[in-house]
Amino acid sequence: MTVRQAADQLIQIIERRREAGEELGVTEDTVCVGVARLGADDQQIRTGTLRQLVSCDLGAPLHSLVVTGRLHPLEVDLLKLSTEPNAPLQLQEIDSSTWTS
Image (cartoon, rainbow, N blue to C red; front, side):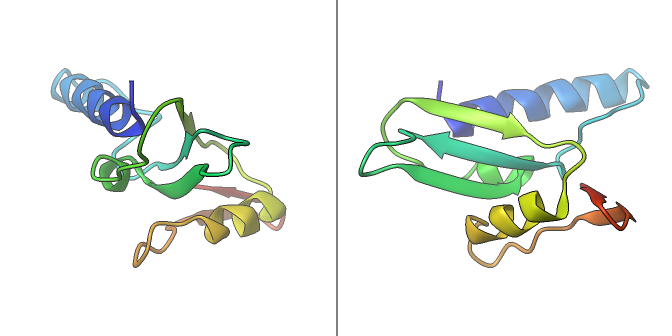
């Protein structure tokens, strides 16, 4: 499964649960990280919302999709290095040492 497929399936689940009136911990705007061929010369890492990663092509397998939760400021800085072009991270500061999407 590619990052694109995983993001699309998660969005479908989110939409069904929203229609059922369930409280959601993850939405289409949750910041996620798509990773392909980590450690290889042609590795790809992209950070964006689930909605943005649906249109992200990371090439050949192996792929992983990481859904973020509460983030440390250092993690936020590292995510900014791989953010999708023209896609600012929309994170909220919980306190001086914790961020979330």
